[in-house]
Amino acid sequence: MLPRVLRLLPILLALAATCGACSEPSSQEDPRAEAAPGGVLPGSSAAADWVSVLLEPGDVSALPEQVATWSVVRKDPDRWGSLPRFPQFTSEAVLGLRPRLVFVSPWTDAAVVRRVREAGVGVVDVPEPSTWPDLVATGRRVAEAVDRTARFDAFLEELEARRSALAARAAARGPVRVLPYSNGGAGGWTMGADTTVDLALELAGCVNVAAERGVLGPAPFADEELLGSAFDWIVVGGEDGVSPSAEILRGKRHLRESVAALRADRIVVLSEAQYSSGSFTILDAAEAIADAIEARAEGTGGTAGR
Image (cartoon, rainbow, N blue to C red):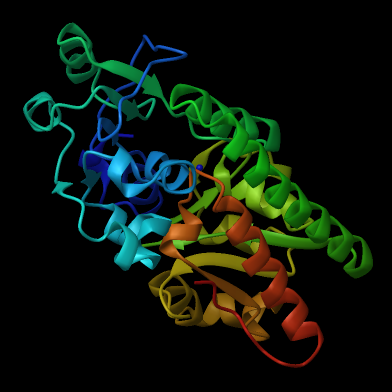
């Protein structure tokens, strides 16, 4: 799949952007809460993703500003563009919008969550999934909170069909070894087990080389570790096929000469929203990875996700 003070580190920026303005885990949660029309407030991009497929804009009080970059709602401005936006998840901002139900991430400031609850607002955690059952459970949790389980069940059928299609493609293609990588200039990072990128790679039918090496969560990944790993592809975050992380790798001659994936430029550039996804858009990332790998195998190119 961390505090905002670490946002200069690209991998931690991705996690922070997914969970919204946050600092520490909240220790309490309401498994169900009642929402009134116009009273639902998603406090993270992941929550906004789920809300966008379960509710109508009229059911939602406002959206966090980061959805413009990190959520699927950015793709439908005609539907969601008129809703108010709030820059930070503070008690003043939240209570000023007078919601009846708020969705938060596990890293939302516990003090803010407490004040919102004390004001009589229902609060539901939207955890970041690292397995498919986690993803399904999270979606159902949001659906139950807003009384949209039938709509969720229909959407889940679509997701399961896409997952099955990916599995069939992977079976026909065979296993591919992939290294997740990020570098904002201060050193390399990777994403190991128990992360959303690991789930995306699993869904795409790929082996996460970092997880195979025993890496858990996001972790530093030095050039020496990269040289000591065997992989077919590298997956990075970027926009429109351009990735600063990829450019840093390409600019290191000793890596370019020694790493076959770099020499062949086998790099999948996911959009930053896909690389940091905390919702069902993890499936979008998996499809983008599979598309890029298969396009290269077919000789048609293609390395970017959207």
